[in-house]
Amino acid sequence: MDENLILEARNVSKGFPGVQALDDVTFNLRKGEVHALIGENGAGKSTLIKILTGAHQLDSGEILLEGEALTNLTPHHAMECGISAIYQEFNLVPYLTVAENIYLGREFMKSVFVDMDKMNESASEIFGAMGVAINPSIQVSDLSVAYKQLVEIGKAVSQNSSILILDEPTAALTNKETENLFKLIKKLRSEGVSIIYISHRLEELQEIADRITVLRDGRYIDTVNIADTDRAGLISLMVGRELGMDFPKPTPASDEIVLEVKKLSTENLLDDINFKLRKGEILGFGGLVGAGRTEVARALFGLDNVTQGEIIIHGKKVVNRNPSGAIGNGIGLIPEDRKDQGVLLNLSIRENIGYTFIKQISDWIFVNRRKERGLVDEFQKKLNIKCSSTEQRVSNLSGGNQQKVVLAKWLAGDCDILIFDEPTRGIDVGAKQEIYNLIKELAEDGKGIILISSEMPELIGMSERIIVMHEGVIEGELSASDVSQEKILDLASGKE
Image (cartoon, rainbow, N blue to C red; front, side):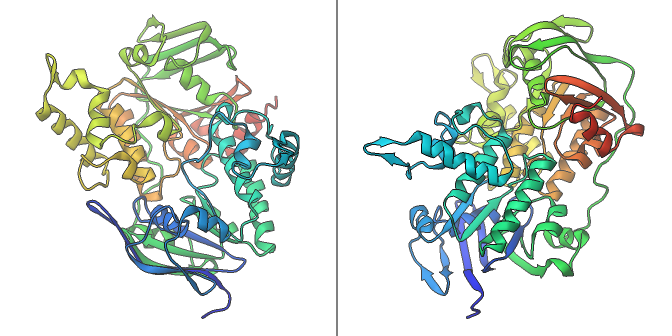
């Protein structure tokens, strides 16, 4: 045995009803290295790490920790062995505080009482080392997706694990937060912690990874040293094909205004928001975490209370008091948090797509199953949702395929205005290309698209115009011919 190896998966296979998630996969992790695990959605990455952490039991093969076989591994046993994971879908208790989540099951005690002061102090020290400012006494339910991600990272760091698994840790982080995370990862690596790093952002790997293992369709493809490969080579290994242009530009939008927002303000954050969206336009919204981009989407979709201002659709003033009203007025929202807001995980693909627009597939009081099957099959094929059948539960799909189900729901509704909030968060390069092409097609079909994205290349590459926000206000607007990352960041930081 190689003495530098700390963790091994040998010839591991795992199947679910109708799906062979892993087929004879081998993987190893060295002491004090960052080993990236990549592949398209559905490649088997999440299944492998859930086996390594005891969340799933393997069908065949073995897991070894420092040469010793681990049998009947459970999450509790994995934690005792020093293996911690931060999954792409968060595992936080929303109505506990940040500190209570970090030390859940490991609370600091003072006599028979929980010592909240000590827990808050310790949590603050962890976040200080990470270079972020989070109030440890605030409820997790009050945090944005990005800050929930940081709490998950803080929780894992607090456990002093020897093996840390990070599943898409930067998907919801800003450039600055990502930079701080990378500093933390390098610090942990220098202290001997071994890290499995899953990311679809291939540009990150050159900075953070030592080796990369590629999975495709549940099978092991190759392991390469980061110094011996490049982005094109990795994509070829991942998808088994060449990809075209990353950002297909639609034809220029018409002059027809489909949406106009005037002096819009909300109770929580937004102040005097004004913009127009044209038919066939992709209008980007940029800004740092907490800038108000998602809050604009929520206000338009009737989720947040509008205190003043007007929403005008096709020249007619509307009031979207709730999502049902917004849908009736032709607005669809693909939310950033697909697990909590986008899909019903315990229902099937068919039910998720069909229930959203049940009136359109119903004859009187009965659902027309033929119409439903036709609708669902059409969008399953159009979006290339990888599944055993449309009766498969959404909870058993990969994150990227769950996102495709969210998209299918709204495409089936044929809305005139579609809001995409971080549409490619946690999605691999192949699926991203499919979604970019889909957004382009929708714009060319005359849909007005609002694209909210934290990924600068995506925002710049897809948008005809970009509105940049800071602390609830619009700081400026940039045209496609006059945009750059530097200009976006300058506006996003609130500079004049």
